[in-house]
Image (cartoon, rainbow, N blue to C red; front, side, top):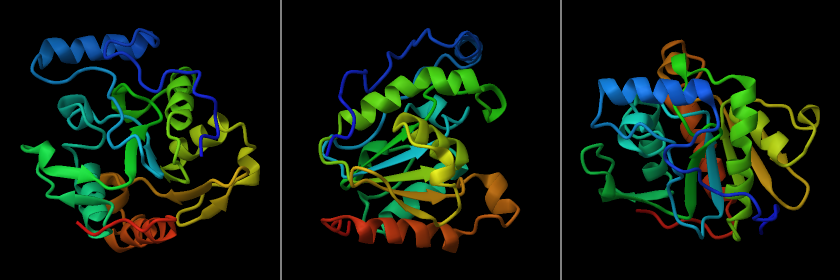
Length: 223
C-alpha cells in the first residue's frame, strides 16, 4: 500500500552533500577511522516489507561504523535480539557476521541518514533528510505498519505523511490508526541512556515489538 508517490529517492548517495555540518563530521570521522563506513547509511531489509522501523540517526560507533542501521551499538543489540525473538528476523545477530541475520517482512531505516555530532541532529537536518523517508515509504508497495523508535522518528513520520502531530501524540506503547490504512506504533528509543535510567526496560521494548509483529496482516515466520 504505497501511501506516497515514489517521486523522491528512497536512499541518499553515500557521500550525501545536503547537510554541511553532517558532511564535515563525516569527513572528520573518515580521517580518524578510514576503515569505517562513514557515509549516509542505507535502509536494511526486503523491498516487500510490510513493516518499516524508523530510528533517529546512525550512531557514531554503530551504523556509521558498520553501514547498517543500529548495527554495532547498544541500541542495535536490543533491537536485533528483540526482532529475532518476535519472529521479525531469522538467523543470528553477530556484528562480525552481519549477513547471518535476515529481516522478515520488515525494513529498518533512520529519520536522519548521517551520524550527527553528539547524536543530536538539528531541525533543519531532519527536514532536509525527510525526502528520503518520503521516498522510502513511497517505495514500499506492501507497507502496512510503521514503528517509530523515539519521538524524533515519530515526528518525522508525521511530517512525512503531512499529519498534525497533535492528532497522533507520541507515547511509548501507543498505537495510532492513520489515514489511508497505515498503523503507527511508538516506542521510547532503545538507547543505553533510556535503559540505564529505567525509562525503557527490555520487557517494555519486547512488548511493543510483540504487538507490532502480531498486528501484521501476515504474521511473520519464526526464525
